[in-house]
Image (cartoon, rainbow, N blue to C red; front, side):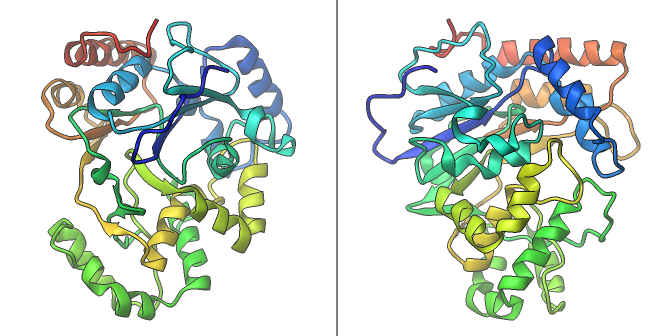
Length: 349
């Protein structure tokens, strides 16, 4: 659906956005049907939560931020389960609406797992080799350049090892699985010997540099830290993962819902770190949690960052809110974005 742009911008960097309308009754019925087919294991309950599919009505602000602050971007591939927001200008020359059944093998459909969708990105017709991936809870707040995401043909990443403990019931268990994959294919000693200047680069936060240095003492990678923010990817890297780990990716794509024992697209970034084919990035964004470590709400701080923040990008973290609290948050956050982006973009009707 929609018209593909007549030509690419000069730098050839696309954007991919994934979105689902969790309020769509037909979609909800289909989800309930598949949820009832034995997908209630301890590994999958986390992936069937309503929080994973809830729409806060903020998608227009993602497009407003892209139009204002990412003029360098080429085609915007808007990936959905055949759903299109009524307000979206489907005839926009830079927009291409991509349904799952246009690029995903039929054996994976229907899917309610972002991981299955992400590993099939290389099959999207016309997708550029270089692209920046946005979840629908990620937003640009200030001007960006293509060089924030890529240095020529290389993605810009922060090499960062993580001390996360191995716990198969932790939502971030994938980080340890990724490390296991990297350790099967690469020697940590050789990676450090070749790229130690990158792992200790002054562009990286001092705390992360210190952690990298301490974890250098371990003979293998324990886990990688990946920021939940708009991220650069190479299509060829995901294709390479299909070549070297076909069973692992097949498992991830065949799960109808996200599970704790599968890999995600961050593995492609970790693979780039292991190969050394990247340039070091400086931090350019922030994840906005809804609660602090003591469970106290952070609504005022979240609103302040949206309205006044100097970060180039943010990710708004959802949470298991009560009904009244959810409505309070949605109203406040919608008002904050409306203040930051008062004018419609050309992506809106």
